[in-house]
Structures are given as structure tokens and as C-alpha cells.
Image 1 (cartoon, helix red, strand yellow):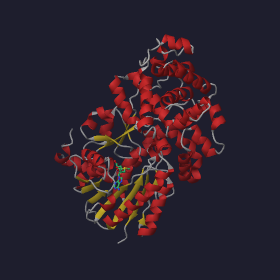
Image 2 (cartoon, rainbow, N blue to C red):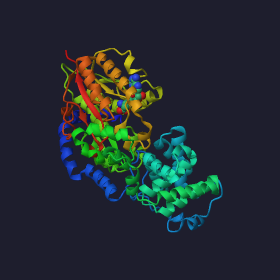
Image 3 (cartoon, rainbow, N blue to C red):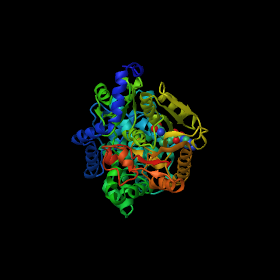
Image 4 (cartoon, helix red, strand yellow):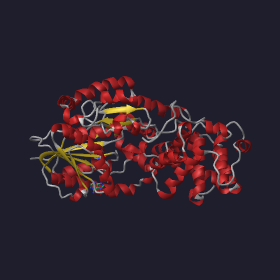
Length: 547
Ligand SMILES: C[S@@+](CC[C@H](N)C(=O)[O-])C[C@H]1O[C@@H](n2cnc3c(N)ncnc32)[C@H](O)[C@@H]1O
């Protein structure tokens, strides 16, 4: 099967066209089947494990690039630990490991993890881009790669918690600790507080890493700080250092900045008791979500070919436990792609919205890079004989869109969505706005520590302007769907309320555009959540332009 089959197989086209229009039924049927599996339940049990495990938690979600060991078990007691003194005291351990000469590494997984932390700290690198490259470069695979991944991503996620403990152990603010030593300390404290790696191994390996690079003096400092960090259990550290208020305490416990935890609590509203589950979901390993490109392959076929499981909500979604999706044949051939199921639902909601008047087949994706939703819209447009315009101002991201929509009826424009120069009259417009990304923290290890409340203010201005620009481009009776991969109220309901007030938009009940998807709020917008739906926390709201 190739993508070329789309044009040649009229029956397949019709079948898939029908599928799209019966997607509500399919979604509902799957939703019911999915309840047996209770994927969210699996997520919750991990979170519960974290709680009952006294903070020695299943240490966290991993990005889509992550490779896991074939057993799927945590790598905590991996070969590397045994060979580096897991069962011996600190000094003997270092000896048993064969004390490395200065500049040498006897511990490739931890060296890689430390180098990821260093790249993130020194040059604002993205852990999920740096790590795969380092694993390849250093030839790490299997359990070693799994350990490096676990430590690098886990420590990136936990920075706030780790730094508070390090500052206490060092008796000075972390700003006064040399950056390269801080990286090793973060790695060591992460192992002590958030994995099942033995304390001796955590300390010894960190001391050995330091000694190899900086010599005995600095290794002594690392040894002392880690010993102090290991004197308390994770719960005792939370008791000792967390703020007293409930949100602040949960934020500390689950290693989130307080403002983000507060943003989640505000968005949950009356259901703020779910805050613990939301925060835990950011640390749970997300499944890989694939989208089966309509017209090329069905979700059922894709699940069969990949050994995955059909999605719970989107008729195009398939879940994979892990592995490298880039190696799968349907992905290599462009018939499937990695795409969070929530993103698929956003594209489908745009197409499910009722227009006032006929759909003439002019669709627009105003914020298209890197092209996931444009590709799904384009695949469906191809079946219907329609066209999509895709706008993206960043040239390199526009290039990604071009690659994603290769051979689909999508025209890519490198332009600012606020001044695209496109001719008005679109039937359907997606404004998948640039946002804080607070709803996808589980897929971006260090992101929670990079964002600040100041980002929100700037983004909200841009979001409002993009929505206003879309309003100029949509025809009377047409629909604009506004979405963010963030549940943060200033960039979700506030932006939409402002548009309704200023533009005179008619707000549709977005929940009706997601047939079969339950528990998405009181309307008229819809909010997905990782802990409820297993998706990123996408927000979406549909606005129709009065005639
Ligand atoms: C949330 S992402 C869109 C994701 C995309 N829809 C997808 O599914 O792959 C937001 C995109 O908006 C782009 N963007 C930023 N400023 C913009 C502007 N002024 N006009 C249009 N797009 C903009 C960003 O570069 C980014 O690629």
C-alpha cells in the first residue's frame, strides 16, 4: 500500500469518506471499547504508585523520541548500577568501577544524561533533541540508552525540586554553585529521590563523574551535598521545603513551578481536586499516538501493521507503547505520522462544525507549523476534492509543513497570520495559536522551567490578533476554530470571550463537535486533559460568523 493508492482506489476513497462522516459513531464505539482498557486508569495507577511509593516514583514520562528497554521495566537496577558499585560503599564502589582517570568516563549512560543536562542549562537546548543525537553518537542502546533517557528526562522535569534540595544540602543558593557541578548534583539527587537506584550507586557514580572531570576536591563537595540529600526521604524533603498552601505543596511534590500548578487548578475550576492527577500525568510516560492518514490507511489497518491499539476518541488514532515510530513502514511511507490524539480531535472538530451555507472547500490553517493538523486536514480535503491554505511565518517550520503535506492539496505560505495577504472567503479556518504549551509538558521535559508568566502576556496579545485576522478571512456563515495546547485560562476562554465581545462571533457548543468524547467541561469551549483523556490538554472553541 502506498500513498499513491489514494487517487487510484475510488472505492477506498468512498469508504474513507464515509468513515469520516460516520466518525461520530466510530468514535463512540471505540470510546466504549476503550473503557474496557481504561488507558487513563493506567495513568492514574502510575500516579497512585508515585504516591504510595513514597516519591520513589515511576520516574516520569518520556518524549516520543525515547527508546525503552525491551522489557518495558524501569531501568533503575540496570547493569550500569551493578558495575558501578550498587552493592558496595561509596569508596569501594568507586574502586570497583575502576576509578577513571581525569577526563575519562566509566559510566556512559550517566555521562550522556549529564551532557544533556549541561546542554539544556548552558545553551537552552531541548532535551528531546539533544538526547537521541548523543545516544547515537556514543553508540548507546538497550538498557544503557534506557537508563540515560530516564535520568536525563527525569532530572530535566524535576529541576525545581532537585535545586531546592541541592541548595539546602550545599548551604548556599544554586546560583553560587558551578554549573557543571550543578548538573552532576541534579543527576545525583534525581537518582536519590525519584528512582529506585540505590543511594550508594547514586552517590558513587556522581562522585566518579566529578572526579573524572574536575579532580578530587570538587568530588568531595559533590559527595558531601549528595550525602545530605540522601539523609531524608522524598516525603521528608517535601515536608521540610514545600510551601504550606495546598497548591504550592503539590507543585513542589510534583516538581512544577507554582504558577503552572495554579494555572491548572484555575482551569480545573470546581474540579481542582484533580490537580494531583494533572501534575502526575505530566510525569507519566505518554503513549506514542499515531494518526492514520485518511485515504491512505485506516486506524484498524495501522494498528494491525504496527502492533498498536486503535485510539479511544479519534477514528484515526493508534496508540503505541513505545519504540521508534520513525522506523515503522507506514510512517516512513507517509501514510501515518506521530500526532497526539488531542490534535487530531482539534482538526476533526473544525470539520464537524456546521456552516451556515454550503462548504465550498476553502479551508485555512493559519498557524500551521510543523504541519500535523494541516496534513490531517489536507488528507481529508483530498478525499473531498477540497484545498487547504497553510500559513507559517517561520521559514524552517514552513519547510516542515511542506514535508508533512507532500502530495496533498495544501498550499504553504510563509507569512505572518496577522497579515497573510490571503483572499478572504474561507469556509473553515483553524487558529491553532502559538501558546505556552502548558498542556503538553509531559512531552517536553524541561519546558515547565522555561516558561514564565511574562510569556503568557505576550502570547495572549498575539492570540487575540490572530483570531481577529482569521475573522477577517472567514466568510459570513463560516467557522473559525481556535485552539491551544494549553488549558491556561488567559489564553483559552479569555481570548475567546474577548473575540465574542469584540467581533460579534456566535460561539458554538464545541462539545458537540467531538462526538463520543466525554468529560470535556461545561461548554461552550471544550477542554481535554491528559489525566482524563490520555491526550495533551488541548483547548478548543468554535466561532461562527453571523451572516
Ligand atoms: C501551536 S503551533 C501550531 C501547530 C500546528 N497547527 C500543527 O498541528 O502542527 C503554533 C505555530 O504558530 C506559528 N506562529 C507564530 N507566530 C505566528 C503568526 N504571527 N502567524 C502565524 N503563525 C504564527 C508558530 O511558529 C508555530 O509554528
